[in-house]
Image 1 (cartoon, rainbow, N blue to C red):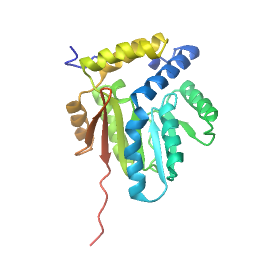
Image 2 (image 1 turned 60 degrees about the horizontal axis):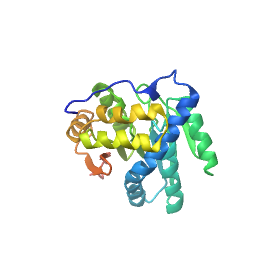
Image 3 (image 1 turned 120 degrees about the vertical axis):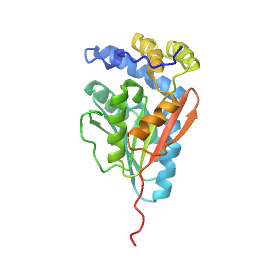
Length: 239
């Protein structure tokens, strides 16, 4: 089981999905991300980069969905008193409106969310870190290469990719956890399907290499997650 990827359309990717159902799914995913620690997986790397650079750092969270991870990282940045500014980006206007409303409710009125087609649009080149959570598994192998290559070309300092690992244990956890943490039928279907579509670590490493990201650091995290961290090669002093 799960030896090969099973990439199928997920319900939340359907543009015809009713707004009410979309919002319910985003709320359910926010709870799942909180429990599984998407933001907590990303934060140490962002904090470390900010401490090393010793200057204001700009972070773009691509395919941010309802913005819960973006909000978490923005809150951690405030608490740390490090000069880190977050921006969320997504293709879906429904998700962006939801994200903006949740940010205002959380007292993060200045948190910015912008529209971005992760596969077709040109990426801004004025962000130090480009990150994403639970997006790579939505893509075909060719699309994944495009996504990773665009990030490698645009990021000033680093690319961070947080996603699911394809495994039987991960599938069982998704099947049970999604039903415990959400009433949304969209989440009930999309959660386990996401695991079936996820990449294994060796596949991620190969995709990264094919996309111009040599020698990324890949670490595993509970529950059945990984973080790929790639640093942009920096030019040494001229002779």
